[in-house]
Length: 313
Image (tube, rainbow, N blue to C red):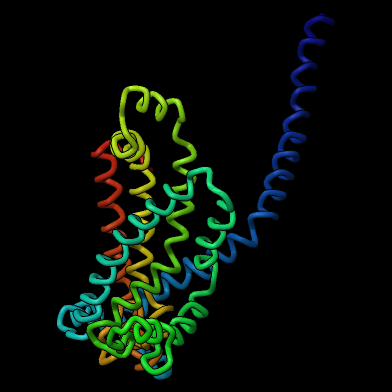
């Protein structure tokens, strides 16, 4: 009997363990949320809540002062009939087509050059990356002085070379290309760093084996290095595409959408509609249209990379 009673007392001893386990689990959970809580509040307060609110505003006609008037999906229907929006879409697409391939090509080219054991390579890498961490507002203000038609440094160089002066940011045909050049100066550092990290992760024995088989530098780069850089290329393509579609700061600090709307992008058009013309409903609808287009492009590139067996994600 004593054996039976002793056997029955043991579960009672174990039954007292779960409360302590629950206390430790609760303590760890509260500690974790103590660290993650402030960041979570910021994300919800500054990202999720404004996104939901903007979607609700996009189905209303509201100027920020008078009571909002529900109009359903009318703002989205008006987008297809807005010639100014179509022009902004065209400008954004042209900028994207110019900017994304150029940033990837230049980033890869500079990364390959800086991946060699040359003198002062750390200094060169720092100089390439500094424009990326610089403020976009400061970059735009500096560009105004460089490309000023009267006293800018760019025209001074052209005069020295005996070439005709240009209008640059004041020309309808040149302004968008100049902004693309400024964006490249600020963003190439990012692609250089990403490609440089990928190049340093390529196994050296694979490259040495290709050279021992008689491959020259171009063949090694074409058949060994390029396939290894496939996932990085997909990632940088998606990143730079999103960056191009969201172009605003350089336009705001240089041309303000001019001259004559030649550099007005989608995000700047949203800013104009919402904060200049106080058409918050229509501006929110355009912003959600941009979000949907960006999402479709991103998903399409991811699916293409997976079908091509490029493990980028």
